[in-house]
Image: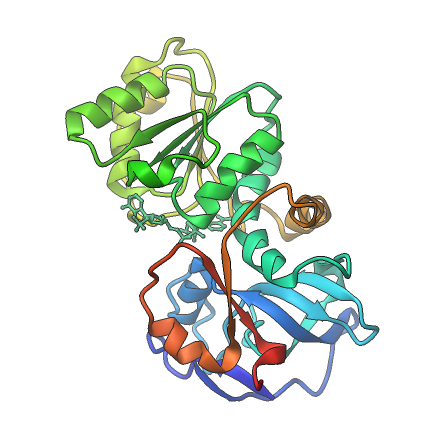
Length: 321
Ligand SMILES: NC(=O)c1ccc[n+]([C@@H]2O[C@H](COP(=O)([O-])OP(=O)(O)OC[C@H]3O[C@@H](n4cnc5c(N)ncnc54)[C@H](OP(=O)(O)O)[C@@H]3O)[C@@H](O)[C@H]2O)c1
């Protein structure tokens, strides 16, 4: 069968032949891949830099997608760490890591939204106990995961959402109650973050690196009540894989610094959230921009610098059209 094949880490995948396994495990089955998203996690899988990388090539990237099972049912699936990912005409899924989706649902939207939406959904439902009415700050709200985090936080009962990111214009109209643009001068950003963070309960952090250091330094001295829990959830690291955490931040306030992702949340817990998240996504609770691309264009698409934030979704079963 045809697939997107990575032969060397750091090189774009090529549309090439890749074998399907001849033997399947007890819960495994082969599905025809209808749609699969090009998430940042897929790029780090394909260049070997993700912390789960098993360092093996050749590999077919792709961590999730929508597949058509032999009985004709559409299923959203997540894959384990495997050399045969979802960017292939067919892949092997474990039925226990998948959920049925309504036949009327749009596979492109589901493949685009599930991974970025899951980042905040799992963080708020599995890493903390968030009562309704809390105040949530999204650090890095301009990407697909950040924009969905605004909608997810509201959907899960947040009373107030503050969107923080670069590009004030892009932050407007995303549904947040207030915005902090990181493009102002340093003094203004510190003042705005400090004020916004005075009573915030939860920070969903997609940035890390210097912006996290700067945000902690701005917020901690301004807390209205040092005893109030501040759950700071590390989710993404688009601004840096390391961040200098001021030691006083952990002593001076009730700061809970935790992470959310594959490993800190068990596969069982992630899987148990799939059904309710898929329901929210298919009932149009959230909006996301998506652009579908045939899989045979994978190499060109991979090397293209993104001019929009729309999530690219490959459509392997239409790959040879
Ligand atoms: N832990 C999890 O469960 C989980 C799940 C899904 C995603 N993630 C992670 O979440 C992060 C975001 O994913 P995504 O799907 O939203 O990616 P995305 O759609 O590519 O968006 C990335 C966003 O980050 C912004 N950005 C990049 N560098 C920045 C900086 N230095 N300061 C401020 N903003 C910056 C980009 O803005 P510009 O246009 O200005 O560059 C862009 O809007 C990734 O690290 C991803 O791996 C984690």
